[in-house]
Length: 55
Image 1 (cartoon, rainbow, N blue to C red):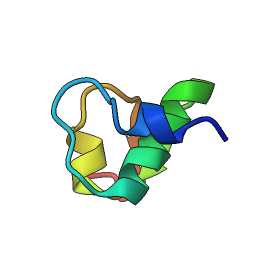
Image 2 (cartoon, rainbow, N blue to C red):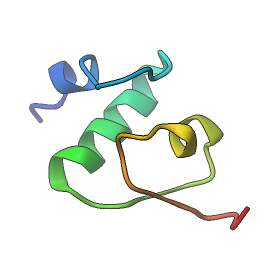
Image 3 (spheres, rainbow, N blue to C red):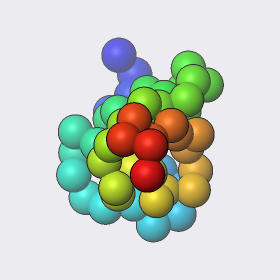
C-alpha cells in the first residue's frame, strides 16, 4: 500500500503512534468514517470518525 508516506505527513497536530497514523491515513485515503474508541483519533479534526462507545 502507498500509505506509509501519507501517514507521516498528516495535516494538523496528530500524535506519533505509527499504527494510528496508518489507520487515519487509510481512512482519509479511501474517504470513509473511522469507527474507533481511541480518544486521540476522535480528537483529530482531519478525519471523520464515529465514537463506538457513544460518549
